[in-house]
Length: 378
Picture: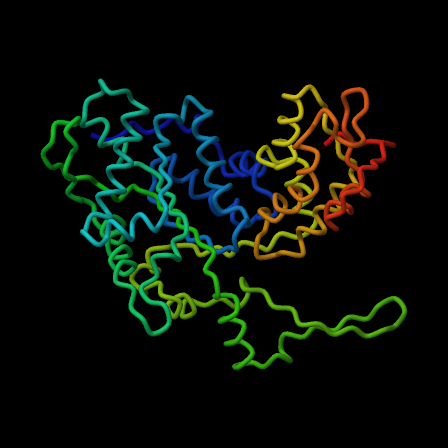
């Protein structure tokens, strides 16, 4: 049993999907476009290649997948064509020890299909729903087949188990008791896999390869300032230099990597992107803190210069990406959160954070004085 094909009018084009995803994912246009095209093809019930996302922690990989989930769940016309599960790669590594990694993925899809269709739906319909799923595997770099010269057996088995799902069109699945037990064949050819990982150390290894091969001089760029001063700096982009051999060396087997039609390297987040995430993202630490103060009857505000100062500080920790915003903001807001009703600078139920307050928080100062001029409500 297969899901009925959707009418063309009910399938959003990639541009519309990208616009929706872009409301939550900042600074990653290539990743958004790639996922949008893949999703549009999948919703049209077409075969689509799997995607591998390579990006540092906090660059937006998980946020992108959550945005896909929300987009599909928000549209009734697509709700029954959007069985999505997210699985941590370490879980697959553990399951691979007993040979059950692939089955774990299918069972998660089946459970999700049951939630969507209701427990009274025919099991055959649930299986068909699950077979059209979208599987997001986070931290796929944790199932590498080796680390240096050491073979990682669990990682190798996990990659092999996923290959079974990706390659085969009739994968045996032992049904749980609630589904009546027994074994059914699941057509996995329509599954879409989006795997993501930080791939710690990959940047450095590729940089070393490039320097040893082409020399550091090939990476240097020369610019001339308005005053005529000549500046020379090394410019290296992982996206530009990454090769399949680098991923093989990292521990992704050639057989596994060949099942991904696209390898997308996410960009490091700069100050502009971090500021936008902090000011506009639905998941930003600022919005969460504002909700906390609102529960205490206080309106929290932050001036734009103060928010930009936070973004500048967070950008100094490129390996953390957007996660650096939470760490930096916590240092600033923590003293205010402990005793909101007596927070320095609180006036008429409003608490305004200025640049001076940010500087004190970053410096670890305990000055209770707070300015309260001019505001910008984020």
